[in-house]
Image (cartoon, rainbow, N blue to C red):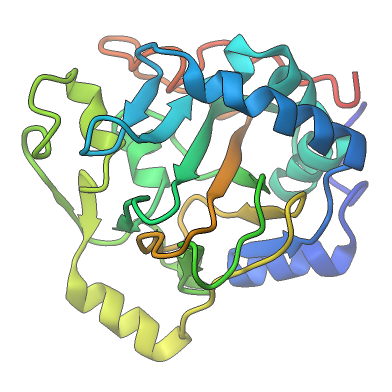
Amino acid sequence: MEMTGSTTVLSAEAVTAYHRDGYVLAPGRLPAVAMTRLSAAVPAILDEDSARRIMERDGVTVRSVYGPHLADQTVASLSRLTELAGAAMDLIGEPVYVHQSKVNVKAPFVGDQWQWHQDYIYWLQDDGIREPNLVNAAVFLDEVNEFNGPLTFVPGSHDQGVLAAVEKEGLPIGYEDAPQWVSTLTADEKYGVRHDVIERLVRSRGLVSPKGPAGSVLFFHPNILHASSQNISPFGRRTLILVYNGVSNPATNTENPRPEFLAARDTTPIAVGE
């Protein structure tokens, strides 16, 4: 598929909304067959005991599993779908590859928060990605509602660039024996945003929590300011997130790279739809 920069998958209105607001929600976007296959694959992904799996502080509840597109053929195939990779090309404006993937879990009653942060600062500081020319494609594996810890955005905040951040030293409580790179994956964000910055932006731009049925896809910019609260409900909230990056914008940290499942070195363009 040749990418010319014109809209080929998403509507012009959706692309405009994304660049204006920093996100766009496509309810029910994932084809039913793909959703069925993905749902069947997820339990095995979560059960795999490996370095790619991050637990909550309790040590028994899965928080995230990174790199499923590298280890699971269903996710690998799904990452090439026109509805996802093609849409990412529309939003980025060039061919893409998957820089990172993960299944995030908000388990009923115990799923922990994600503090206010931006994603791009991690990819800039830890991976050496020079430009925020990436997009998150978050596939809802369960219904996302107001009770099970939905993502909350400050709309339009992506146009502020990288916001003032506070870098925390060391590993969070409960993860003291983990590898250093784990500090970027827990409830205690390594690169937090100051409260005064958050307050200023929220008071001027408001808050929004996109919600929808399983199979919906939420595309969001790597610089949009976002967080999510604890899951206080009996409803699970699992999300597959595929991070697409433009092929002209690879990771440049070759001296101390993060593991492949956090920062891909293979930048081969995705052959969309294959």
